[in-house]
Length: 78
Image 1: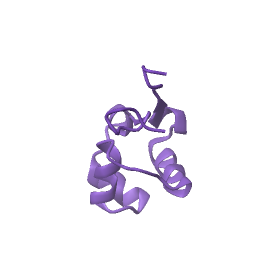
Image 2: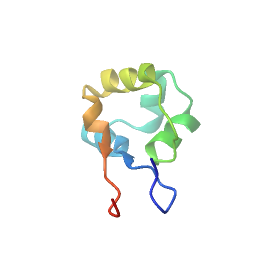
Image 3: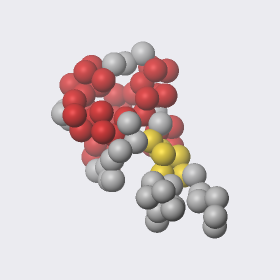
Image 4: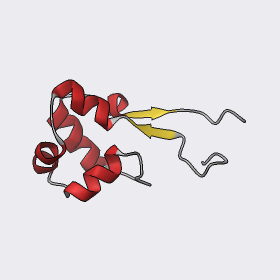
């Protein structure tokens, strides 16, 4: 589902959780075993998909729930 701007209605708030946990991109990438480039894409809300295994690893590393990272923002036109 996409809105008129070709943006996803799912917002990734990874940067917020990283700040709350005081973890940098490089540190988290190492803990999650994901490339820095791919984690950056996810953090900057540019990802088109995320594997559940990756989401699980991120939640474990940040001690949070998937809902702390992912947010659904409905299209205002709907």
